[in-house]
Image 1 (cartoon, each protein chain N blue to C red):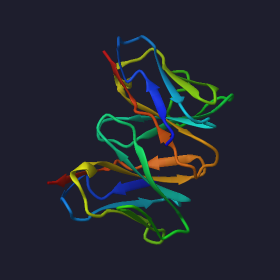
Image 2: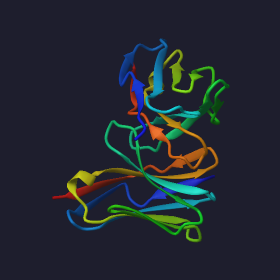
Image 3: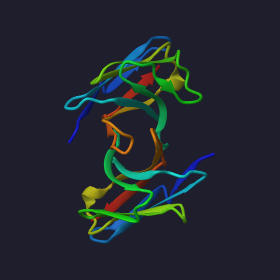
Image 4: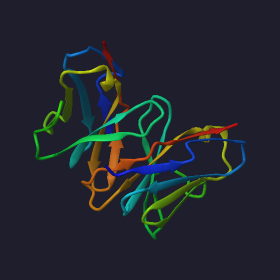
Length: 116
Length: 110
């Protein structure tokens, strides 16, 4: 099956610093990539949708200047958490999809971000 | 606002029995419904998709039903095994958007 990787798997940073998370589709071209955030015992919350070569579409309540998304190629999307604060600590998961909306999304293993 | 409820936060089932998980939703008309498995500290893994015009879908020991009148989906694992222990997420989709439930933690007891 299709594989999506994320790097890093865990990151600890100081408050005020920026953190970049990479999401790669390893064996397919992803027309669309999604970024989710999951707090403990909560559901995955969609943060933004990105299509290769265009600006990301952010969900209501998600600050686009704080969570910068770049989808420079069909196999790579990055999420940068700028000026991170402890409340940004969470599990960030990306997913990638080929083609039309009925196609399944393939999820990455997630990145655990801890902001001290 | 849209709401998805998965029947219980945790469910204990004896090995070999059928586990049944419930997903109810309100204020939404999904075009399709998906079930995912998520292990601790990992991303979700896709299991099954069922479209709004389908009643039932099967895949090996898994069966999903979708009742758009009741706004409910049932997810069954037959002949359950300890390796089936995980959190199972229900997700509703229309066009590009997928909305996830909080999940049910399933424990299969040996």
